[in-house]
Picture: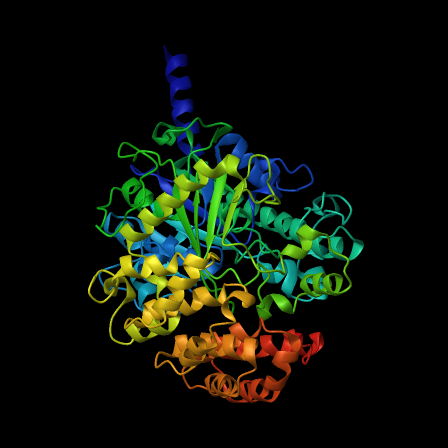
Length: 636
């Protein structure tokens, strides 16, 4: 009996000492986010050349998602949905770094976790794309800084901690100089952690040359560095005795930062790696098989805020419409989800997408703009410069060239058989039922949500001066979205019926209907709209600036009209940032000869305008003409 008593005492002492941190009644939650990464560059998603042992182990012991999607294709809109749980096309936050206001009653979701007793920290990226960002951040987090973490909480207090790793960001993989990458990424990896330029298969959307491989190897090595840093974080979590009390989420903020991925409303821009790891204590909360489980369940960033608030035992606010993924309140799975992509940096766009995980359907509402838009931030990169050199030298195949060409109005890709989205099935009769189902879902969803991004950004900026786009869209008198959709969904249609309707709507009393009519005409073939000179020249003098701008670009392009040219110069020099941004972006897609007369104007814009978007757009215009050399671009 004495022996048994001593053995029991030793056991109690041993196991009591082994657990260095107190347990909590609620799970700790660790969010690990990385940037600009598609799943096909991660080992556990089948890439045998990637070096991602930490992420792979999380997946081996946890749950790997094959159908996880960002709600946007560039960082700040994606993070807007992540932090608020509200879709950007409802909030008005779809345009990259636009900083428009949101209703005061909408808080960052960690606020509701704080109310439930959690200690919530962010280390350290915010970029939430909202006005009054500092106040919003202070309200959402207990601490948001590079020093923030679970270590400052009260004893026994559960935590929610976010750590964001930037090493895979586009700046590291393509836009920063190669020498920067060598110093900050490549030279800091051990030999076994490095991926050689010849050690991976080049995606077919890029030309397979030594010059391109040199640049593309940056993606693999940047992800290797990211994985290494995640490993250090998990070591600290385990050292602090907290891993067995903590549910771990790992995911990227959107798709790959390489050309054709980030900023584009296709699978390569939306789909993200996503893994959830459950400690033994909380495996009962998982609806999925753990220890190497794989699920094809559809999830997107809208689902994360309600999931975490519910997991923390908080009260869900009414504005959240996403699913609860985990626990006893788990929501029903979805058959289809809707995604969106709008302006990135200075590059305007509007794409709406539906996917069931296998098929992805995208509607391009500005199809005259190519996938590789003139975005200065990307144009300064060596890889884009190499691609443009190869394009000019006729060294690209038809697929690789298509990145620089006007898009069709619709994409439909089968990701199961065509991972790199090389075969557009939108006009294939064999897939007509799939396309029709997705198209109908898209229209229904956008109408129900009252997508406010169908307003030109000029209008959203005006609304934001006195109210919020989120609230504005709910007033049917101010925003008759059904009428707007009728004309907006004709943009990209090239039938005679669509053309006739667009010409009729140029005379509408509603400025937004006229906007979509002229935008639709811009998407028509030149030979089809050229005969309607009188109507187009009349629209040059439209009182609504977005209509006048688009009509002036068309009239100058088709007829070399002097009034249109004068209008374009005036709008380039406008004090209104949205007017200048719109006109400069649209002029980027004129021919070089047509753009040349505007060089003095663009140089003046650069001298006069210091606001972010206008400055970038004017430099982009000059860069597209070769007026500014790459070394000057990099320096500025």
